[in-house]
Length: 270
Image (cartoon, rainbow, N blue to C red; front, top):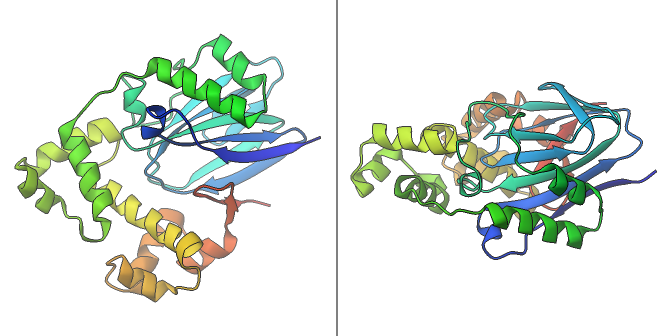
């Protein structure tokens, strides 16, 4: 029985403005897979072919179950995922402020499992193929049909400022630059992204340190990384990792596995 895990990018010019990547996760012979994934500034929709959602830590296969659709907002804490039985899952990873372009009235405070992101017919088409090129075309097309671009200058300027200069970003400086109160910026940002702008910035820096260690400079030590990302010292970096992952940086990287070709770094439980 075959297992597949593959990440892949959208091709449609408009869709890929708002979608970071997709991935396909198939485990035909699965009994139990349990893993931890960590705070991220992206949010996701997971599509399961035949599974039941029991709670935040159990996705259970049931061959008679209808497809399951789960929205996971920006993650501030470690997320434990347990998959019991066969898995056939397609995941859409949105860029910040991305899902807002396709769906309205999304609440970012918790998981959403009662929203029809895709129709039954669309789900049937998606699960009928394992060909990546065909999946890209289907996902791109289904999402493009839903695309109704919206603009929010406060959110967009905030995101540009954070991603443009994450090492030196301060909400006060942004507030002065765009001449809008910090309180109003934070209210609008949280309404559209799901977390405060300060917390979002903290998550960005955390993810940037992971990216730096895993893909850009694997030989760089944690003292150097702490300095590069404007943490006061390595002790400060250790405190950030403890807060986000319950691990020191060293333990975090030693326990983890890169999955696919994007930025998925999970801790699998034995």
